[in-house]
Amino acid sequence: MSQTQTLPTRSYEMPREHYLNSSYGIRSWLLTTDHKRIALLYLVSVTFFFFVGGVFATMIRIHLLTPEGALVSPETYNKLFTMHGVAMIFFFLIPSIPAVLGNFLIPQMIGAKDVAFPRLNLLSWYIYIIGGCFALYSFSTGGLDTGWTFYTPLSSIYSNSAVTPAVLGIFINGFSSILTGLNFIVTIHTMRAPGMTWFRLPLFIWSHYATSLIMVLGTPVVAITLLLAGLERMLHLGFFNPAMGGDPILFQHLFWFYSHPAVYIMVLPAMGVVSEIIPTFARKPIFGYSFVAASSIAIAVIGFLVWAHHLFMTGMSAYSALAFSFLSYLVAIPSAVKVFNWTATLYKGSISWDAPMLYALGFIGLFTIGGLTGLFLACLGLDMHIHDTYFVIAHFHYIMVGGAVMGYIGGLHYWWPKISGKVYPEALSRFAAITLFLGFNLTFFPQFILGYLGMPRRYHSYPPEFQVLNVLSTAGASILALGYLLPMAYLTWSMRYGKVAGPNPWPATGLEWKTTSPPPTENFPVTPVVDWEPYDFPNRPDLGLTPGTLAPVPGDD
Image 1 (tube, helix red, strand yellow):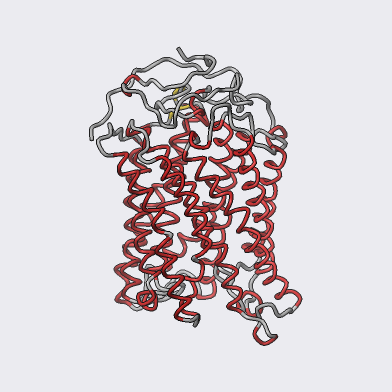
Image 2: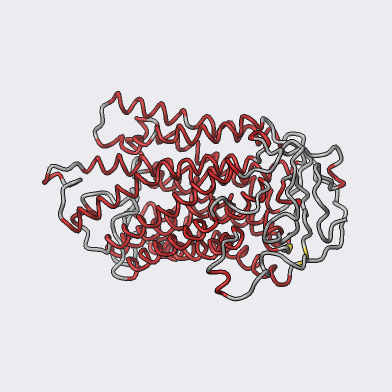
């Protein structure tokens, strides 16, 4: 693998009319139906919740520097890890890539002017904001101490924290996911450009189609489940209360029926991002396109069949446990297909080590570790030993943070020239990617060892022999924080001071790169006609040429 030759440079000017300057004033943004502007509204919103969750995580790691935990009381510690989980999972990880990158890119990638239901798209953002306000109200009025899973009867009977507004906020936020998923499904089915057949769709579209199916089918289950827990708390009903004939294990079945597929709501879009970045920076067509596309649908389908591996310790029958263990191993196969096909695409490719590629490679490494350690938890004998230990914490974060967040930030870097029309400082972005990768591993790899040695999760104190590994983890978290703060700083800086990017700076083959940067309000000057295969790179990638033609765009020769 060798680095690509230097691409020829051209002089570009910003287009005169684009979605960032087509109208002015905050009112035009709050009432917009432009999918690109709504994506930026989501970008600001999810970034806010990311930093809210990050503050709670910082306090957790500082508290765990010493075995007895000198920062907060045990009760406050319970609230910190609960609020961290709620903010990160429900208000950052689940909406981040679909709501931001999906909203911005799906119409452009299929040659459409907008999503199928633009007003519904704006409504979904407002619903997200309303749900988020309820969660913030819960955080600020006594906090939340049930764990992000809201297990009953703690959440429905015994907790004295602000459970009801948090549950209501997540219930409301669920409608945002459902409407977004429905919008994407209808858009992909009905608004593809002429010539854009199903097997000419970018793999980013395939991953979001699969994700949207999970959103539409799974979100109502968790929304109703949490609503029932809230009603039990407020009206003293007996859905999950064993004293009134209810079953607390039923809550776990219903919760995880959604919440395990929700893992793929977070990871599948990141896989779509990586499937776009790898061929672009390897200058090769994706290896086994149809298998990678089919694997996204397979993950969505099989993901609904593995929820009970979270309940191995609840006393289920050995036969049921064996069946769910087998299915949990089965769902790893389509994920492995993607990893092997990405690796095959890299083989003998002309690799360019730009920042998006570094994030994509980091995703592959971290997601692979997270996936393999998930098989440990699917093994009945091993799960008895490492259940509810820091091994679970490490595995979950390798998937969610190492996978979903790495893919999200990589996608932001890859499409940032299209979003902003500007180029960020490349050297600093590479440094940030490496810093994030190293900081992440130093933070979470010691937790695998802690879990194997028996340190339980969600405890505010621990035996002194575990302190060295906890100090390493906290030190890694400080490096990881730098890796997150740097992109926020230089991407914001580039909006004003970055060089003009031009329509296709990488260059890449997708439709979104065949319009101006930033795109006009309706995306394309004329309706494109797709007459090339996906990722159909020319024989001379060093020239920066891409197949397929459209009407000339301003500033491109």
